[in-house]
Image (cartoon, rainbow, N blue to C red; front, side, top):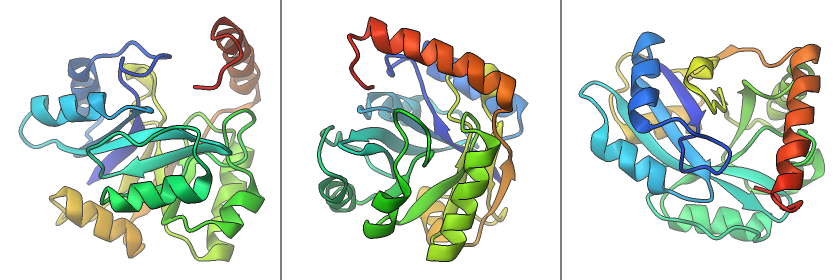
Amino acid sequence: MRADLHIHSFHSKDNHQTAQEIFKAAESKGLGAIAITDHNTVVGAMEALRLAPDGLIVLPGIEITSADGHILALNVEQDIPRDLSVAETINRIHAAGGIAVAAHPYRTWSGLKESVIRKSRFDAVEAINGRNTRKNNHRVQNLALELELPMIAGSDAHRPGNIGAAVTIFADSVQSRDEMIGAILNKQVLLDGSGRHTKETISYGGRSIAKWMRRGMRRL
């Protein structure tokens, strides 16, 4: 089963795709599961849980802005405050019944630094992010292997065409949210995808700076 574990809906301020558009794209890409991980809100994930078509597993989540970078909370159904320390953010995720994943490490602006990951109690790392550079994805994979941390992959899609660009592959016998979490923690998954090449990265950087300035230089 192929699953995209990092997707944004219009409930993220930098996104416009609806739940129905996400479902349609997931079906066209042959995905059996998705995780909706909007910036600092679980509203989109809970909406997707209610509306999901039969046969599509929705893993609810959030992409949380911690004091040191973005953290994915997977399998949570409640908001977790932004701008807390990494340690406190991870504690809140665990208290909510979820797992804490270091999102797109090494990324300028919003990625966690290696030193932060090394000293924190992350349950997994996002080893392939569809919007991260290929170089950084390789660095994350090497770090995860060194630290013996589980790995996941997700597209970080902000539009339907990018959904499925990076996926986590589960055994076909995995048929629930809890089984997905267990497979991740037990390293019983495979990853597929790459990341952005240089030309895409330069274009993305320009757009990100423009959006950042329009937000009054405030991080998502």
